[in-house]
Length: 275
Image (tube, rainbow, N blue to C red; front, side, top):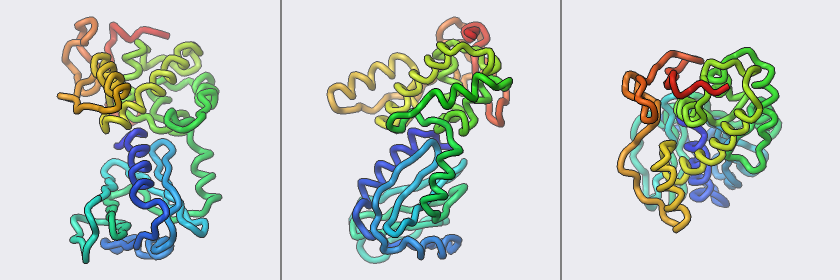
């Protein structure tokens, strides 16, 4: 499932392509004809994300709400739109102008909602490390009162918005946190360290289009950002994610895996003992 950095970048790209235009909205698949008709040829005001939710505002208090789920994609074609662009796959929604075509396929949710409904969705979500002025205290309040493990809590979008299985596994390893420690036994300083790590790592994901957590690659991307150009990373690496049975990059112990909150958690039993 796409994590928060992917939705943030998608909102940015949709905003760049369609802001202040009046895209024609259609549903080639036919499953979203009524919704597409509500926003077609209305001015696209802006797009934003909150965690794994995408919102696009159109004139007239109409908001497009999208959750990609496990298999959804929202692609933006930046070549000039001349005539009828062929439809590839099951396109739930197409936004088209003379300059851009965006196709939404396989979302878990696609709806046109009101400003009040947008606020209702947002109010149920935890703080998003990519949002302006997020409040980590909101997440800490829920964590510090919960008997659930920190590994479960980090996957709860009402606790922390935008973090998925990859960031969960990697950040808990980076901070040497026991993933099975109950939230109410976690020290506040540990939560602060987790939060600050996410605040640093998610923007790197936006910049590169991939999840970057290993120290050497993190430093490379930081250097690239300072000079204003991000080079392609040669390979995708991780500390623990999808490395079950392989040696830990720090201590050499075998990486373990177990299903937690419906997804495979990966961790190092020797390194991750921090309370």
